[in-house]
Image (cartoon, rainbow, N blue to C red):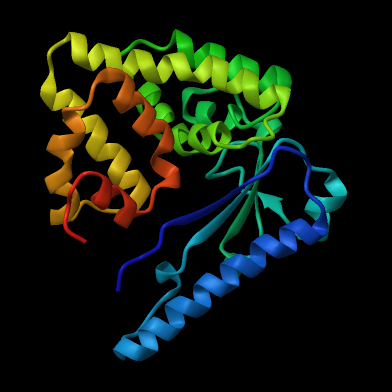
Length: 241
């Protein structure tokens, strides 16, 4: 049975106990569905078949952390990541406590004000071929897409779009100018895998059509991708459902 690796619940403001309860409820609902599927297929499951929940928040009071018995694992993880009991399979990531290292850039961009701004500065300063730059842009594609279609953008959201959009455009321009069709294809494949979990035969078919889009249209598609279902994408590019 396939393993669901992670569930992410990002918040722009400090959370309340009720909001953390809601996240845990979503996790339990997913676990329940996995159990039901296993029963239907008469298969055995282990804890590794259940997803891990990551609750991402800019700051958290010690009262909240203590209330959920969330503790640091200093031997294996960096500061700012607090784990609930083992069987909860849940961690609370306090973004403003994370160390300033390349591995945490994408998380710190989800922070606020100075923390977010510093993280974007670090992302912009990374060499073009740095894997953390590529991976961060990939991980943030969904976030930027969701903010883009939100009609009630906050000034902070607009600032984030203004700073991140050129980085996506630059990444696409680099692939086009270098003439590396394989590079463009790899970028599209990565985005599709990130959005839908895997590439099947039907998605493979439409990649060539996506690659033929003009640069502006391809950039627009990247920003829309998280709001398109698999069937909508296939229908748009003539793939069979």
